[in-house]
Image (cartoon, rainbow, N blue to C red; front, side, top):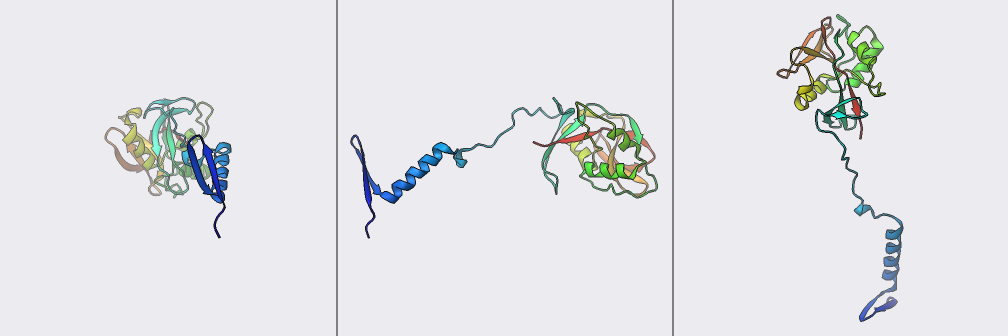
Length: 200
């Protein structure tokens, strides 16, 4: 059976096509006018992201760079508090802690808060900036991320605690002068710098 044909004329132009094709074309044109075509939608690209190490207005600190998604944690920017909050003991010397993640300082900090007797975490938990109360003590990999991206934001003559336990007696630390990471007895008072996550 031959398809029903329709002829369209406009000036000197003539188009002849099957009626079913014209109906599909008409529907597609109608939807294109009513709904934005998905193929032409451009992803939103943030244009107001400060440079590494620059203050991020409204976020409580400086841009520490983009952290790739890992496990259940989506990609995010690491916001570094504007200043150190003193020297504090890691705490819990001689006791095993569940704060053993090398990459997730927020999870470590939550564990340490629940365990109690960790002065560094208590200081971080009390810290707020620009209305944000979700700061935490960075894990050892997050401190290394800071050294790679913004070492100029940290003192070069002292050690910084991470939230990552190494053993019942030791926790990981970072020295920003040369990027050395090691561990020290939890009873020592080392520098503390809070960070938080900003998801875009």
